[in-house]
Image 1: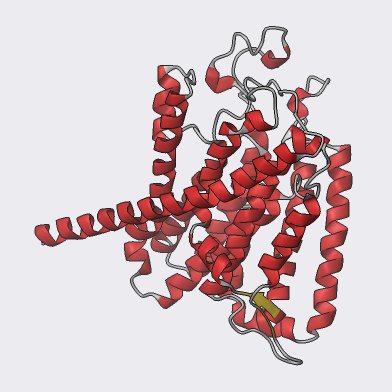
Image 2 (image 1 turned 90 degrees about the horizontal axis):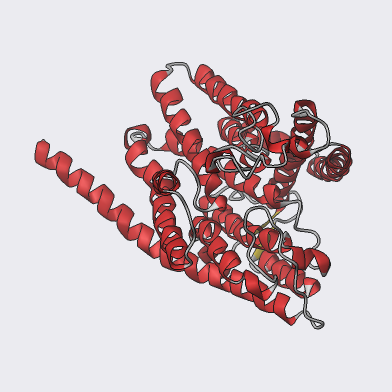
Length: 420
């Protein structure tokens, strides 16, 4: 099964690939069209990542390259977002004036339509939540869909970008402020940990009845930034901004001795991947749940440092390859258009069709026993449903979000015209 999936993914990547000739480069490798196609591929890879993390796929040794590299693909999204903000700010004179209305709505509308869809699903499935949990979920202050963390982080980055570049007159200082903001997220995210360690008695969760007596918001990963995935690729947002700022000289430098630098980038990627594997084997992000009565902050920072270097190396390598070989085809163009909705909505299918590959739902930290048919047909069915269904849901919700956004923008314009 895995090799079929890998083969199809490879075909998706090489279809429409344009190779620059000797001594030439693809000048459009950072164009909106090229980067959107790349994000479409990354959206598929994120779905494969989440599928591969299920116990059934792990037990069957299927899709084994994907369980630990999901943040690689999210790094691409962050890099493209940071790059796009700076390019748009430089090329569109009124970009910052319309930023809150146009750019923020682009992520907030999908977030709240997704929240509504998941709320309807939870009601239909009889999911039990307290009144306060429903209210916080509806507002987005806690996540009704665990995959939606990306929207929270990117929204905070957008807000920080807006205030930095509208309130700080010096562009250099505005960039510095953004760098500090991203770094602060990473530092504080580690200190925040995976659960409300600061609530109740010290190490309350290690007590025999610790979780049984705790409030819902004290549970693992219940609040914002509780989990390394919130912070282990966000540095690419700032790097994308820097690349947009210095794109000309950086690209010119990369072109000189390109093949040597590409080989060096590949060596760096392989090397950092090995280092990251060793660090993650020796240390852990999840130190709160180890035998020692310690938060293990040092272990967490070691893991974050290793993964940060790795994801930066991956993104640099990908875009260096695109300087020579970039891929644009009708399928990836379409997937790129709905990439955000695919990212947000496919978790519905992961949850709904879990009974195909497990003997019960994943509830309260209890891992259900995996189910693997002798011919692995249930794994094939599950993967097909999640991927194809994710694309269908992405298409539907992209259509809905576009209409809601158009209404919100036109409604706001009409109200301002009336007041004027």
